[in-house]
Amino acid sequence: MSNKKKTKYVGKVEELPSKSIYLNINHLEKGDYELSIIHQNKLIKKTTFKKN
Image 1 (tube, rainbow, N blue to C red):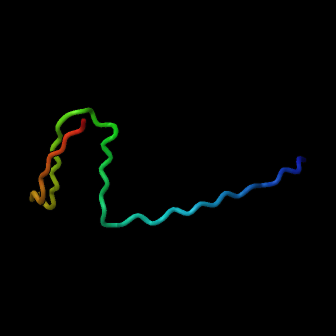
Image 2: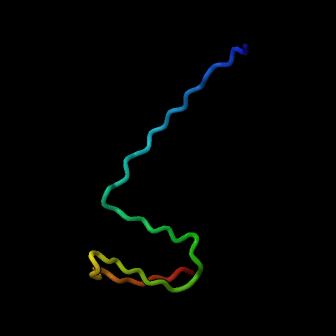
Image 3: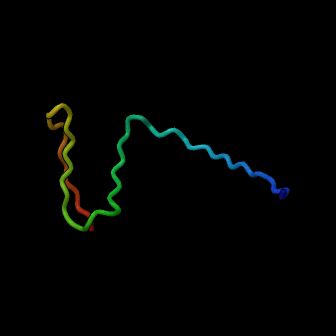
């Protein structure tokens, strides 16, 4: 048998805020977009943005 040492790797991840939503637009095509936030079939907020 080989005498290899087992290596343990440990990492800590900070807890993400439970009331935040992140929108990553890196893979969207260039152009104009509209974002609608809806809760229980009611529009809460509508906003537009442009990716250049």
